[in-house]
Image 1: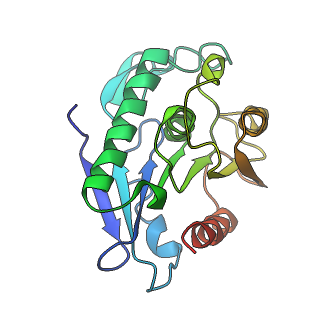
Image 2 (image 1 turned 90 degrees about the vertical axis):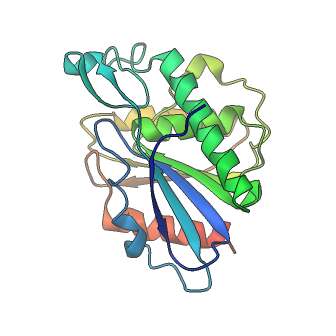
Length: 219
């Protein structure tokens, strides 16, 4: 499988861990690049942040216009929100990116998978099905994309999970996030849940909480 182009930011020499962070619909790998310095990670915790570009594909809810997307979205209701084939394809891409980090010398237990919106949906699906013992998963303003496939054969369900959502998100209802978090808890994940007074975005308080979570992950 051909890996996507990625934006990479390292916070120091000889990274001891990697965070693979997937963007949302219509964005690209540069979208969350500016957050890295805002995390203010200590000098003794050099990390590599990998921000892949999603493939360009037609998106049904946007009139079939081609844009960067991890999967197609047919409708905005709970049943049609995620194209299953596209979700599986992008899950495979994320798993390949995890494999590449391992080849670069980062153990699976030092790799965090993360994503915002549809990128977060891919991170969730990967956490459910991967055989890797990952360091953690971060899912921001997102949802469980394939609820009928929750009983995957993944082996990483004891890993820490950070989930966050805006209380007045007009794109993805807060309840979708809450229900997804509870479903993951029921499946055995240790979910740390956060709500912020924001829309479909990331806020400074959330960035501070992400920083504290990463410091715990890599302690």
